[in-house]
Image (cartoon, rainbow, N blue to C red; front, side, top):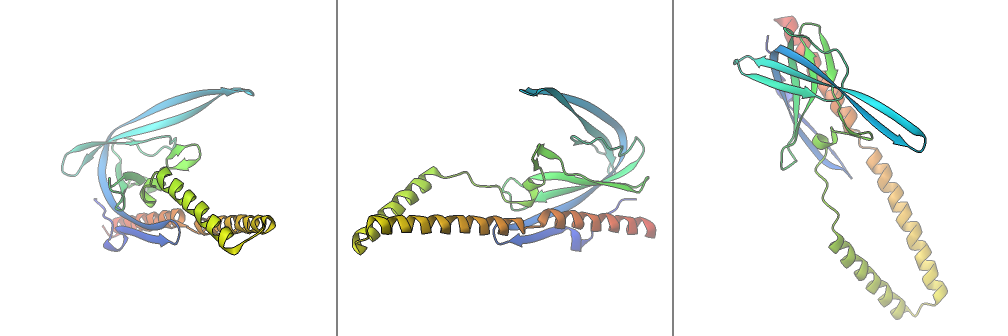
Length: 221
């Protein structure tokens, strides 16, 4: 049986003071597994402490959709036993609607035969998750021209303040210290506000609701 994402769960929308808005569209793709391949990759690395290695397993599923079309879905760096040929799977695909390129990613799958599911967060690097591509807007490149203009404008403004107020060297030093405290205080508040963004956890809970609904649909059928 084909399952579908209910209308109230098709969009994941949230916002945050610092990190901005998030608007993700979710789609269900159901098919029968025709073949399943696993590819093992070993990476060797070394430093002053010695040589080591890490192994990752990539999986590829060829599935046949209801309309007869076949599609290959690849999941990288995952060593779970997810399915075998003949199993019916539903993949959940997420698309970032705030990304101009509409970045898409498979974020979960549900196995109709085993009643097992996998919420999939692929690491892009050892420290980051690919989910950031669908949950956040693309970051703009650092604009050095704007930085230089701002720096010179701030310098000129400071010189004008010093000249008009007739401040002494000690007064200028006090202003610099106050400015440094203000900067680091702002930086700490900014970091704390960014930390309060819980969209990764909220998105995972949203996916769990969808999978729960899949189970309810199959019970009714």
